[in-house]
Image 1 (cartoon, protein in one colour):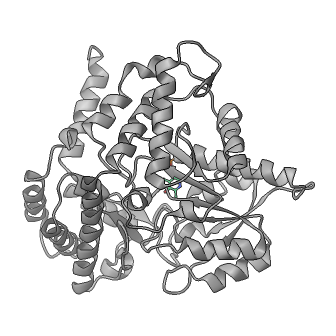
Image 2 (cartoon, rainbow, N blue to C red):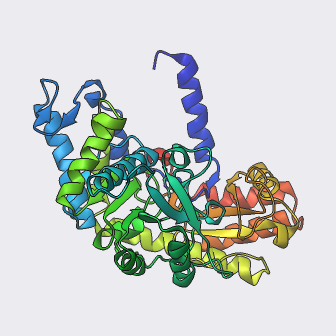
Length: 414
Ligand SMILES: *Cc1c(COP(=O)(O)O)cnc(C)c1O
């Protein structure tokens, strides 16, 4: 690369990623093929519109790329229609809400009022786009929330109570920091009982769904949105799925021209590669290992006396305040000293602010891509426990981390 300033920063970031244990639950390392597609000359091409319905000439190959991505997404998630153009998970959610809003307007249900969405309390693991005051979602829509129960789990009696109290038009499931399996069929029952539209945002668990390790929301929801870069291990981007012929038309109009302009065809090509990879037995085995690693890590922390959630997927929450007397941000910074990267996260009934928090969210999607074994996961639990507890010094902790790093795959050749 001729631009030495950017080349230098890319090299430094590559080194940083190679030389630390990535335990942020929303990150992953896509394959070389995904990155090659995402870095390809497809970036040059304008292709506003959809396959066979473009506003530009010269789209004969681009049409095939996008159609392959759509077909592979539909096959992977066993659903009828897909929109592969959203630039991110947040864009996918914006378009999904808009598609339902237009539908409800046509049904005459939104006379002089905003569409009402019932989503999960943000402190319990919902996403910004599910109604945070700093997100578009809370400005365009009337948002109310359902809580988790005292065990930190979804409780369909509490959810039904929130429906009766708030009378939403739409109910939303799928979260950023929920460590358990989600029973979408129960949401569907409530949606039918109260005549609600049902959206699932599977951004975090899409890889588990693809591999058959989670109930498939496409069997129950009106619209399913996702990212492609978390457990699904594709390029950074968004995805929308539905089985409803009328809804896909409204979803397509909501993505382009309502919210977006020209699609990122290089990223769409990367998504197509990722959807093919995610349909293999190798990927199934990978997801199996992610879940095992997260489970043995959590069990080890439990055995050592930590206060943390259980796990039934790729992530868990550790209460650092009760376990070590540290806030989430303190624990995050201390672990960064020994090249373990995690993010602070609100825990149930957190009394600290979102900038401080009382805990960490930890996941094994990224590290398992590099070949992390369950022995490594148990070692990491030991290192994290003894270092946060002040039982071992920085040098010996770093030495143990380096031992793990020494046999992990290079992030550029995973
Ligand atoms: C990560 C995430 C998103 C948003 O993804 P971006 O691509 O960062 O916009 C949306 N919903 C959930 C539940 C997420 O975890």
